[in-house]
Image (tube, rainbow, N blue to C red; front, side):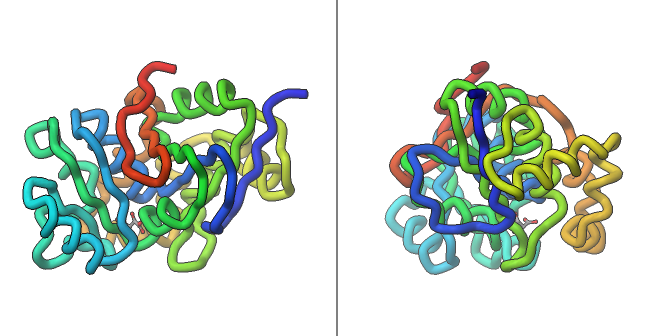
Length: 230
Ligand code: MLT
Protein backbone atom coordinates (compact mmCIF):
# COMPACT_ATOMS: atom_id res chain seq x y z
CA UNK A 1 0.00 0.00 0.00
CA UNK A 2 1.17 3.55 -0.74
CA UNK A 3 1.40 6.45 1.66
CA UNK A 4 -1.94 7.25 3.27
CA UNK A 5 -2.88 10.72 4.48
CA UNK A 6 -5.79 11.89 6.62
CA UNK A 7 -6.97 15.48 6.34
CA UNK A 8 -8.74 17.47 9.03
CA UNK A 9 -10.61 20.61 7.99
CA UNK A 10 -10.18 22.12 11.45
CA UNK A 11 -7.55 21.86 14.20
CA UNK A 12 -7.86 19.02 16.69
CA UNK A 13 -5.62 17.79 19.49
CA UNK A 14 -4.39 14.96 17.29
CA UNK A 15 -1.99 12.53 18.91
CA UNK A 16 0.39 11.12 16.33
CA UNK A 17 4.07 10.76 15.71
CA UNK A 18 3.91 13.17 12.77
CA UNK A 19 1.53 15.76 11.40
CA UNK A 20 1.44 18.71 9.03
CA UNK A 21 -0.29 21.97 9.81
CA UNK A 22 -1.55 24.48 7.25
CA UNK A 23 -2.43 28.15 7.48
CA UNK A 24 -1.82 29.47 3.97
CA UNK A 25 -3.01 33.00 4.85
CA UNK A 26 -0.68 33.61 6.47
CA UNK A 27 0.98 31.86 9.42
CA UNK A 28 2.59 28.84 7.76
CA UNK A 29 3.56 30.97 4.76
CA UNK A 30 5.27 33.41 7.14
CA UNK A 31 6.98 30.63 9.14
CA UNK A 32 8.36 29.14 5.91
CA UNK A 33 9.54 32.58 4.76
CA UNK A 34 11.20 33.37 8.10
CA UNK A 35 13.22 30.14 8.04
CA UNK A 36 14.02 30.53 4.35
CA UNK A 37 15.44 33.96 5.22
CA UNK A 38 17.67 32.57 7.94
CA UNK A 39 15.64 32.75 11.15
CA UNK A 40 16.90 30.24 13.69
CA UNK A 41 13.66 29.18 15.29
CA UNK A 42 10.02 30.28 15.20
CA UNK A 43 8.21 29.69 18.48
CA UNK A 44 4.44 29.45 17.99
CA UNK A 45 2.35 30.79 20.85
CA UNK A 46 -1.42 30.79 21.06
CA UNK A 47 -2.11 33.95 23.04
CA UNK A 48 -0.78 37.46 23.52
CA UNK A 49 0.09 37.02 27.20
CA UNK A 50 2.27 33.99 26.44
CA UNK A 51 3.97 35.97 23.68
CA UNK A 52 4.84 38.89 25.97
CA UNK A 53 5.98 36.49 28.68
CA UNK A 54 8.38 34.75 26.30
CA UNK A 55 9.67 38.14 25.12
CA UNK A 56 10.24 39.18 28.75
CA UNK A 57 12.35 36.05 29.28
CA UNK A 58 14.15 36.47 25.94
CA UNK A 59 14.42 40.18 25.14
CA UNK A 60 16.54 39.43 22.06
CA UNK A 61 13.75 37.41 20.39
CA UNK A 62 11.59 39.12 17.77
CA UNK A 63 7.95 39.40 18.77
CA UNK A 64 5.74 38.96 15.73
CA UNK A 65 2.12 38.27 14.97
CA UNK A 66 -1.35 39.57 14.46
CA UNK A 67 -4.76 39.99 15.89
CA UNK A 68 -7.55 40.47 13.40
CA UNK A 69 -4.88 40.57 10.68
CA UNK A 70 -2.98 43.53 12.13
CA UNK A 71 0.23 43.89 14.12
CA UNK A 72 -0.43 43.76 17.86
CA UNK A 73 0.49 46.94 19.78
CA UNK A 74 3.89 46.41 21.47
CA UNK A 75 4.95 43.73 18.96
CA UNK A 76 8.01 44.23 16.73
CA UNK A 77 6.32 42.93 13.60
CA UNK A 78 3.01 41.77 12.18
CA UNK A 79 2.35 38.54 10.29
CA UNK A 80 2.98 39.60 6.70
CA UNK A 81 5.56 37.34 5.01
CA UNK A 82 7.07 40.58 3.68
CA UNK A 83 8.07 41.47 7.23
CA UNK A 84 10.14 38.30 7.65
CA UNK A 85 12.96 39.65 5.51
CA UNK A 86 16.55 38.48 5.84
CA UNK A 87 17.64 41.76 7.41
CA UNK A 88 14.95 41.34 10.07
CA UNK A 89 15.18 37.65 10.95
CA UNK A 90 18.57 36.23 9.96
CA UNK A 91 20.06 34.29 12.91
CA UNK A 92 17.21 35.46 15.15
CA UNK A 93 14.58 33.62 17.12
CA UNK A 94 11.02 34.68 16.47
CA UNK A 95 8.00 34.42 18.77
CA UNK A 96 4.89 34.17 16.60
CA UNK A 97 1.31 34.64 17.77
CA UNK A 98 -1.46 34.42 15.19
CA UNK A 99 -5.21 33.94 15.37
CA UNK A 100 -5.39 30.42 13.93
CA UNK A 101 -2.11 29.04 12.57
CA UNK A 102 -0.09 29.13 15.75
CA UNK A 103 -3.16 27.98 17.69
CA UNK A 104 -3.27 24.86 15.49
CA UNK A 105 0.49 24.38 15.93
CA UNK A 106 0.04 24.39 19.71
CA UNK A 107 -3.12 22.27 19.64
CA UNK A 108 -1.79 19.23 17.80
CA UNK A 109 -0.05 16.72 20.02
CA UNK A 110 2.39 15.30 17.48
CA UNK A 111 6.06 14.64 18.20
CA UNK A 112 6.96 16.12 14.83
CA UNK A 113 5.00 18.97 13.27
CA UNK A 114 5.73 20.35 9.81
CA UNK A 115 4.43 23.75 8.64
CA UNK A 116 3.23 23.56 5.03
CA UNK A 117 2.55 26.33 2.55
CA UNK A 118 2.43 26.54 -1.23
CA UNK A 119 5.96 27.96 -0.92
CA UNK A 120 7.33 24.56 0.13
CA UNK A 121 4.76 22.21 -1.41
CA UNK A 122 7.10 19.73 -3.14
CA UNK A 123 9.49 19.59 -0.19
CA UNK A 124 6.61 18.82 2.18
CA UNK A 125 5.25 16.14 -0.18
CA UNK A 126 8.73 14.53 -0.29
CA UNK A 127 8.98 14.62 3.47
CA UNK A 128 5.58 12.95 3.90
CA UNK A 129 6.72 10.24 1.46
CA UNK A 130 9.71 9.65 3.69
CA UNK A 131 7.56 9.46 6.81
CA UNK A 132 5.15 7.01 5.12
CA UNK A 133 1.96 8.57 6.52
CA UNK A 134 0.63 11.88 7.76
CA UNK A 135 -2.21 13.71 9.40
CA UNK A 136 -2.77 17.04 7.65
CA UNK A 137 -4.44 19.64 9.82
CA UNK A 138 -6.00 22.82 8.43
CA UNK A 139 -6.10 25.81 10.78
CA UNK A 140 -9.36 27.28 9.51
CA UNK A 141 -10.56 30.64 10.74
CA UNK A 142 -11.88 30.90 14.28
CA UNK A 143 -13.52 27.49 14.10
CA UNK A 144 -14.73 27.79 10.51
CA UNK A 145 -13.38 25.79 7.59
CA UNK A 146 -11.28 27.91 5.25
CA UNK A 147 -10.96 27.50 1.51
CA UNK A 148 -7.27 28.35 1.27
CA UNK A 149 -6.20 25.71 3.80
CA UNK A 150 -8.38 23.04 2.16
CA UNK A 151 -6.87 23.97 -1.20
CA UNK A 152 -3.31 23.35 -0.03
CA UNK A 153 -4.37 20.23 1.87
CA UNK A 154 -5.71 19.00 -1.48
CA UNK A 155 -2.52 19.86 -3.34
CA UNK A 156 -0.65 17.73 -0.80
CA UNK A 157 -3.21 14.93 -0.44
CA UNK A 158 -3.65 14.35 -4.18
CA UNK A 159 -0.14 12.83 -4.21
CA UNK A 160 -1.19 10.12 -1.74
CA UNK A 161 -3.92 7.66 -0.91
CA UNK A 162 -6.81 9.28 0.95
CA UNK A 163 -7.21 7.86 4.44
CA UNK A 164 -10.47 9.65 5.23
CA UNK A 165 -13.33 11.43 3.48
CA UNK A 166 -11.81 14.87 4.03
CA UNK A 167 -8.67 13.79 2.19
CA UNK A 168 -10.83 12.60 -0.73
CA UNK A 169 -12.83 15.84 -0.81
CA UNK A 170 -9.80 18.16 -0.85
CA UNK A 171 -7.91 16.04 -3.42
CA UNK A 172 -10.85 16.33 -5.82
CA UNK A 173 -11.09 20.05 -5.13
CA UNK A 174 -7.37 20.65 -5.78
CA UNK A 175 -7.51 18.70 -9.05
CA UNK A 176 -10.21 21.09 -10.29
CA UNK A 177 -8.18 24.26 -9.62
CA UNK A 178 -6.04 25.78 -12.38
CA UNK A 179 -4.91 29.11 -10.90
CA UNK A 180 -3.99 29.15 -7.22
CA UNK A 181 -3.90 32.93 -6.84
CA UNK A 182 -7.34 33.34 -8.44
CA UNK A 183 -8.69 30.58 -6.22
CA UNK A 184 -7.19 32.07 -3.05
CA UNK A 185 -8.87 35.37 -3.86
CA UNK A 186 -12.27 33.68 -3.49
CA UNK A 187 -11.62 32.90 0.19
CA UNK A 188 -13.14 35.00 2.98
CA UNK A 189 -9.75 35.52 4.56
CA UNK A 190 -8.26 36.80 1.30
CA UNK A 191 -11.14 39.25 1.04
CA UNK A 192 -10.34 40.48 4.53
CA UNK A 193 -6.63 40.78 3.73
CA UNK A 194 -7.51 42.76 0.60
CA UNK A 195 -9.57 45.16 2.72
CA UNK A 196 -6.57 45.56 5.04
CA UNK A 197 -4.24 46.29 2.11
CA UNK A 198 -2.36 42.96 2.06
CA UNK A 199 -2.98 41.97 -1.55
CA UNK A 200 0.68 41.22 -2.17
CA UNK A 201 0.67 38.74 0.73
CA UNK A 202 -1.95 36.68 -1.08
CA UNK A 203 0.08 36.76 -4.29
CA UNK A 204 3.20 35.78 -2.35
CA UNK A 205 1.40 32.91 -0.60
CA UNK A 206 0.24 31.50 -3.96
CA UNK A 207 3.77 30.74 -5.21
CA UNK A 208 4.52 27.04 -5.55
CA UNK A 209 7.99 25.78 -4.58
CA UNK A 210 9.56 29.13 -3.79
CA UNK A 211 11.80 27.24 -1.33
CA UNK A 212 12.75 23.71 -0.30
CA UNK A 213 12.79 24.58 3.39
CA UNK A 214 10.51 22.42 5.52
CA UNK A 215 9.87 24.00 8.94
CA UNK A 216 9.96 21.21 11.50
CA UNK A 217 8.93 21.43 15.15
CA UNK A 218 10.06 18.57 17.36
CA UNK A 219 8.57 17.83 20.76
CA UNK A 220 6.35 20.92 20.70
CA UNK A 221 9.24 23.40 20.89
CA UNK A 222 9.82 25.64 17.84
CA UNK A 223 9.95 25.43 14.07
CA UNK A 224 13.46 25.25 12.71
CA UNK A 225 14.95 24.52 9.34
CA UNK A 226 15.01 20.84 10.20
CA UNK A 227 14.92 19.71 6.64
CA UNK A 228 16.17 21.32 3.45
CA UNK A 229 15.91 19.84 0.01
CA UNK A 230 14.30 16.54 0.96
C1 MLT B 1 -3.99 33.28 11.34
O1 MLT B 1 -3.27 32.57 12.06
O2 MLT B 1 -5.22 33.34 11.46
C2 MLT B 1 -3.45 34.09 10.22
O3 MLT B 1 -2.18 33.81 9.93
C3 MLT B 1 -4.03 35.45 10.13
C4 MLT B 1 -3.28 36.41 9.24
O4 MLT B 1 -2.20 36.88 9.61
O5 MLT B 1 -3.77 36.78 8.17
